[in-house]
Length: 255
Ligand SMILES: [Zn+2]
Image 1: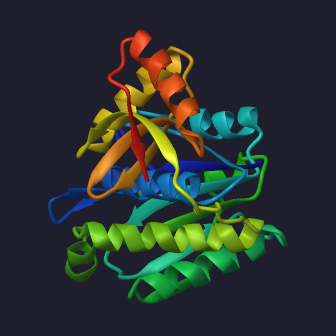
Image 2: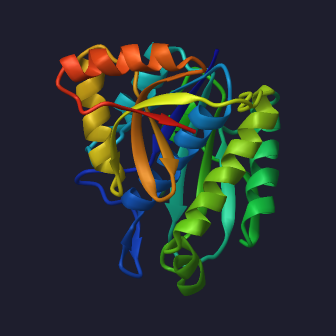
């Protein structure tokens, strides 16, 4: 099991950078949530924990404590830049060697394959999340919110998707992640579908509280809250029955 900790920068009372009608905290959450969903939907043997899944105020210490206590294999912090530049850059803690430099190289290369951002280079900085995390850590700055051209791109969900896909591809190469075998019908047990990801997160949290293993799959414009996937229809029906008993509107869908 590869444990990836994803840290959407800022949140709650800290909006991060602002510009062109956007707030960094919302962009970082969108990008991070998509990275999580793609990893969980498409790759095997992967576990993801996020420092926040909604608009919570979360201190830097809370973030690194969460990753350290969980025993993450990798810490990925997602940010959006400001201050008058343009393009993409990423950071590791100064002076580190492999494997951290390898992960930075791969993520850097794969993100820039997906997006038409200027390459601002692979950088080093003594930042809290890079310094206080006990595992290899990379922080990415995904364009400038105060640059008109970067901001226009960041407003498109297809561009957010490409940024997320670039990070995923970098992680796949870094950790040798294996694609799920999606051959044959799969019966998924679903308890809700939403156009707004925070609503999906809320329902997922309720289901987790009642002991269900939830994950969120993004398909056809919906964040689908699912609690299991089976090759066997009867197993899916059985789990759906349990969820209905627990008060959820569970259905079985074939994908
Ligand atoms: Zn930031």
